[in-house]
Amino acid sequence: MKKRRMFFFGVILFVLTGCQPSAFGGESIIEWVDFIKLQGIEYNGIYSGVLADEHDIGEKIGTVNFRVADNVTNANYKIKDGDAAFHEKGTEIFQVKDQPHLIAVKDAHAINGYQVYFSRDDLDYQWHFKDMPIEKVKLIEIYQSVPAEKDTLIAKLTKSEDVNTFLQLLVESEENPNFQPNSEKGDPLFYEMVFYTEDPIAYKFTMQFDGNTYYWYPWDTSILSDEIQLFMNGN
Image (tube, rainbow, N blue to C red; front, side, top):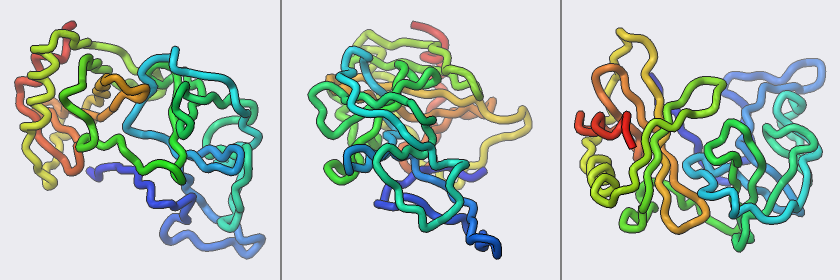
């Protein structure tokens, strides 16, 4: 099982390996980075973060004019203002309050209702686990992911003792990049862990359970203690 990751190295798009241009117009199969371009600025999706509170949404600052995914097959296409990788025409774009380099769009399937984006020209990506100020985490939510549906909240940790214990289990997880999940019981269960600090963007990381082992990806695959099960089905 290959681990999926997204990287932001200033690449707007790339052509899949082995894909050849067509003899009838140079069409290619393109995999797009999740982006929005607005007012000359390119914003990339924050894949390990969610909006902490919908009250942090500010004024509307634009609208998507064109969805490039499934509509553009020319690898030389130059993105322009109003273009978005995956959002449909008419999608409203909002400023995040007091955060000039962050924007958001409504998403019914996203935790807390919005997808958030950062200006890659003004900010480095800063939502990895190593970037998270653990001492500032006050609330942890755990969601079970269901394909094509909104994630279901299964646990909320509010007591400082529970929050600290859960964080310690993550910190003490054992890195094992060669781990292979057990597939005898089918596909693993997917969970999203959301960590709230005082910032408008909460950190979000994926955890999986293959029927025997809980594991996650702070960077390389890491195995979690069975004690994590104690937090999976209660408030």
